[in-house]
Each structure stands twice: as structure tokens, then as C-alpha cells.
Length: 176
Image (tube, rainbow, N blue to C red; front, side, top):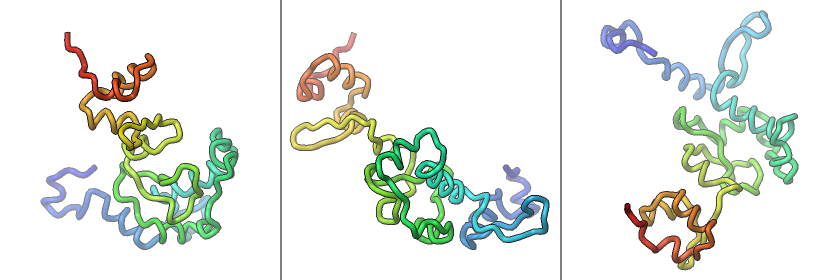
């Protein structure tokens, strides 16, 4: 964090984001490794590198969720064994809020099935999400909630109480 006055005085040129963005664009971060002299480490220390490592760990490491990834047959495109090619395909993360997301949860980690997504998009793109079909359209409860102007918990409670989808989505909420 940088004080606004330092930016105005010219004491600093950015809040720190500029250096990070430049290192991501260059694809390299420089720094000591194991106390040795400075060497080039492609992307190490960047959020993109951490996302790449986490993806690899979920699919092939001793991660608690390996059964949810490799156990379901999900693999990583061999091209992405190289972080530089992953970064080339995915590009820099748009913001600190974005994280790596598979568009098709049953699909592999590959360029055409991955994107940088915001948490709200990620929540709506989960295997645990309950999809509800109404009038020929299928959406998650949160999307229906937003559309009909009713809380998600009210919809969930109505459906778990045995209400039909039509009744749950169309009957007005009683106010006290």
C-alpha cells in the first residue's frame, strides 16, 4: 500500500501493481533461490504461477480433493506442463479477485475449457449447485432468485418442503 501523497510527490510511481504486471508480462520474476545467486524463475511468486501450481496439485498431488479431479478422470493438457505456455494461453489474471475456473466442470484443464473467473461465477459453476428447470430454461437457484426477486434460501426451503418448481418460483413471498 502506498500513500497517495507519495504518488503525487513523485516519490513512487505506482502502488506496486505496475511491477507485478510487468513481471507477468515478461513471464519472469527474479530473486534468490535457496540462498544462491539470483536466477531467473519463470513466473514464480505471481498469482498466475500459484494458480498453475494449485491446478497441478489438485490433479496430481496429495491434495484432499484429488478424488474430485484425477479421480473423475480430469487431466491437464500436456502443453500446460510448462508454466510459460499456460501463461501464454491464459494471459495475466484480470484482477486479484479472479481465479482459474473450468467452464465445463467435467472437462479437462485445457485452454478452451479454462478462464479467469470471479467468485460469483465460480460459485455458479460448481458440481454442487442445484439446477432447476422451469419454462424450458435451466438455471441455478441463485440465478432464479435474482430473476424472480426472492431470496435463494426461500427458494431452497420451498423446494425442499416439496413445493413444485412452478409454485416455488411464482408464489409471492408473504410479508408479516
